[in-house]
Amino acid sequence: MLIQHPPEAKAALQHSLKIAVTGASGFIGRHVLAELARQSVGRIVAITRAATRLADADSSVQVVEMDLAQADADSYERLGRPDVLIHLAWDGLPNYRSLHHFETELPRQYRFLKALIEGGLPALLVAGTCFEYGMQSGALSENLTPLPSNPYGYAKDALRRQLEFLRAIQPFALTWVRLFYLYGEGQSPGALYSQLRAAVMRGDTIFNMSSGEQLRDYLSVDEAARFIVELAVRRDDQGIVNLCAGQPISVRRLVENWIQQNAWDITLNLGHYPYPDYEPMAFWGDSLKLEACLAASAQ
Image 1: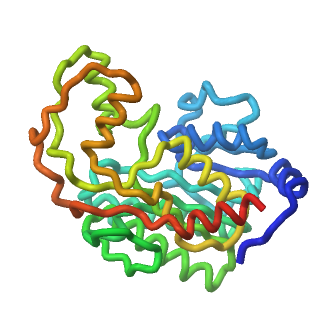
Image 2 (image 1 turned 45 degrees about the vertical axis):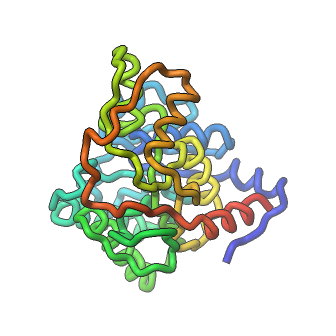
């Protein structure tokens, strides 16, 4: 159930909150830190394995060096007992097929989160993935049964289930955001947007890609960060929420839009690469629950 606050009370509540972010030096994490600062959240704790990665962070951000693999019973205290944790950290990407995801990463992640929850963490928002839905096509709603078809999607779904079992014994508020496709500044070099931008910066005249007819759900990372923060500050048990645009777009049209918006001079070489075999040709997120949560947050 979502709690409604008057605007003044909501602002005062956010100003008093202490929010910690794992994966803070990553692509999404940096945008989340910026959004937390923009929304004037009171105290922000950025968690990273190496503080040097966040040397350019705002002076209001407290940077804490912590290796998730070394989590212990004092981890929650070391983070200053935050009111909510935004958990974005996950190693081993973008190799979705690596067994590392469930052999190493899954138990490491669960131990870390369990230590915080047993230490007293009252609310947790975790980044899941649309790959939890597997090869299901069309509009994907949170009510669908997960059918992950690669190790990454399987490990994420397994972590969610583990946390739900833990919650039955050690109550805490859990929001699980299933990320669809994000794009924007700071993305990894292997991402489609980054590859296109790099090709333009090199002066390439041709950009090789697939035929681009696959339908996907793309959301700018700035919007995604705003949605994540708005969901996190609620500190409610919102369950699974698709973090998506809610509208299908062909990859070809998406790339053409990027070229047009940036006035880039480059020609697409369509059909150069085959379609990936680990995802269906057409799928996108059902955004109705996300929209309802955000509307409630605005009240």
